[in-house]
Image (cartoon, rainbow, N blue to C red; front, side, top):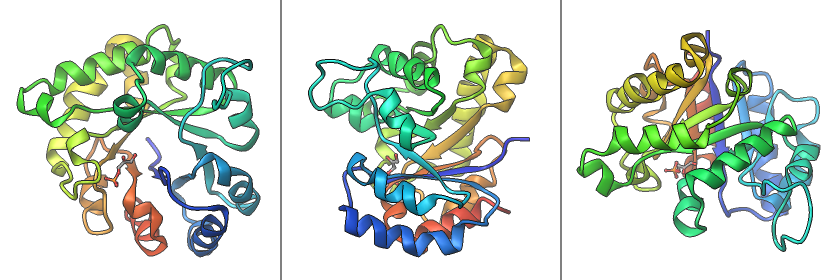
Length: 251
Ligand code: 13P
């Protein structure tokens, strides 16, 4: 059985002070809930948030890392630096692919580097609106999974999490339908994982849905057999909404 996981991607939001306030509202409600809950705030707030999560069941994740261990990479953060504070890291988010030139190949380097320091990567895949309209969803998502997870062992693959985030659903208020999202997971992503890592691994790897998840649509999305939780953007910045979304994964 796959345990549900809900991750909040704060993106480029919240100062340290604002982060402390948001986390202080969430911890009392979430620290005993039996859902793997992960907060992914900006790098500058990780220290402060990690101190607040000590002794809770809530995990901490970064939103990116560089694949090299150290060196002359101005502005970058190494896997080891992230692993000092976090258990998870979001990799290959569509905003990083679109605005910062990330490719399936760089995502693959990051996935390997993250696994190498014991982090759980949350690897994002998903088609654009144009690709969706061109009926390219299966081809695009298959390629992203195949290249992004290339050369991993089955044991490594079983440690990571995949997030299917159709780009057209991110921040638009237009979530995929529950059945539509489930179909991509069941008919595209799990079969590709089975081909790469075998059927048992494909059935044990958690796959999340992301893109306009709200307190109102979460329960229906998470009730789908192949959707193992959510990667939540905007609604993770409001404690009441995020708490409802995490609790929706319980039933
Ligand atoms: P929204 O929930 O704001 O649509 O963002 C989804 C997302 O990109 C999470 O990584």
